[in-house]
Image (cartoon, rainbow, N blue to C red):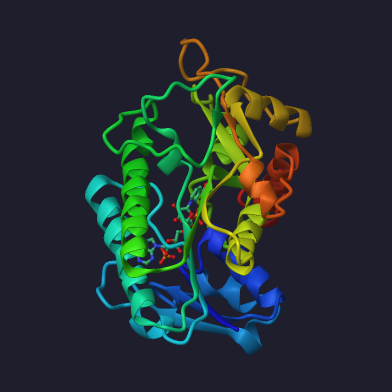
Length: 316
Ligand code: NDP
């Protein structure tokens, strides 16, 4: 079976590619620059890559860029999206890029299902209050006009919300069978050489920086990749799937890291003196119906730090 993964060199996508190859799929991987060794070496090293991995050049902002690669694919995993940039650079590739990929799928009768990587950012941010008793679930949708406490994430949140909204509209209008994955912050081992945006806060903590006053969910990258593949393989999978092992305040993240690595100088100091932003819960029910078992946060953090060590991102 032939499938396509967009943005294949990314943190989450690399694990999706790895698991797909392990399961015997032929994978068409799209990248902006398939000639860049930093982007492809880790993919070419994967088991099964020699036989069943094909690299294609495609850019979200180039119309028709995905048309030929998607032709003949049975499934499409659309993960490519800019993670944390500046306004203008972000919304267009996210929204137009998603539509660009879905248009290619609509033109290709071979495509039976599309799995879209959205984000919990498209779920969480509206004026609905969040407290430790509140359980957020797949029925929540972020309001793109809502301004939340993490200013630097604002445009990313808007880009993911608008991209998912546009995707649902397009899929419904064009009869595309689409399943959406909404992960929280992703941690766990890195296959790619560079540090991606979601593990950066962990690196900041082990480098001794104060933590932001915010509460966020965390999930393991392998569970996220597994969920994408299950969402594709299980015929009854539908709608959205929130993925979160646990929502914690950054102070708790710092506490877990200190207990895992007692010799490191991890601070217990917050960046501000305000009361801690409360946690909330994220429903695991739907994700568990796919057979996802969530890796505990402690394990995900340990795997992330061990991966930093292996790649010489940290030296201790
Ligand atoms: P990475 O930054 O590792 O990967 C992002 C990928 O998107 C890269 O492969 C990048 O390609 C590609 N991309 C960005 N802009 C373009 C463009 N204009 N054209 C083609 N490709 C482009 O991030 P993650 O693996 O963390 O993220 C993957 C997906 O998961 C994204 O959709 C993100 O929003 C979503 N997500 C991530 C979470 C996380 O915590 N990590 C949480 C929730 C959702 P290139 O290599 O060419 O730069």
